[in-house]
Amino acid sequence: MPTSLHPSWLPALKDEFQKPYMLSLNQFLEQENEHGTIVYPKHSDVFNAFNLTPFNEVKVVILGQDPYHGVNQAHGLSFSVQKGVAIPPSLRNIYKELQTDIPEFNMPSHGDLSSWAKQGVLLLNSTLTVRSNQPGSHQKMGWEQFTDQAIRALSEQREGLVFMLWGRHAQAKASLIDTKKHLVLTAAHPSPFSAYAGFFGCTHFSKANAYLLSKGEKPIDWQLV
Image 1 (cartoon, rainbow, N blue to C red):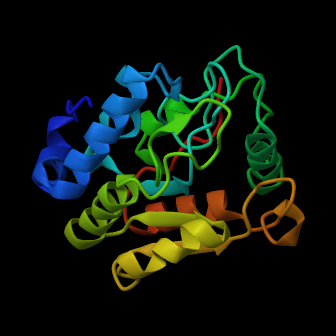
Image 2: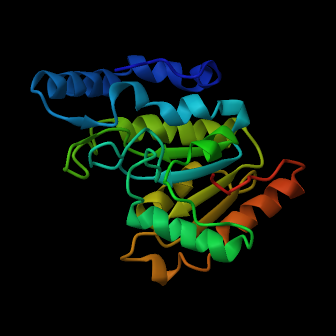
């Protein structure tokens, strides 16, 4: 398992790598590799969210569940896919909501959200790896404890962040967040199965920017080019 996190995350997360759950998770991942199991994202992209968004630069957290499990999709950022890969349905619905929420937003031709990450949007999945074509296959192996610690550290050590929790799985993380210090926005998941049940019309992106401005922070440019 790579442990090369951006240095800003180390005070919050470095001790996790020596805990029993993480040693067990590392052993599990090594076994997957030994058995020739295809795991996404590739080894070097597992901690992409942490490396593209330093701890002290996080402004917004968008929490996903699993990495995408198709070829060349996942690259370590929740809801994001690599350029050249078809835009998944949930991300297309995120773009549709942005079109109505942010008037000047234009539908991108790709699904790479790296530019959000570089502006301070932590695109964090609660589970950081998955077997090819087997959604949920690496859940409850230890990743959730690691990513929960990241959320907890942000809540405790930072102020004025926006947490976007879409769907029941993400909303279960609300107990980790101090709502007196941060803005927590909840809505249905952008999946085609639930987007019309409260994701469309949630206006989370404009609400996030209004909150950041109220805290004297630069808003996120949601447009992707």
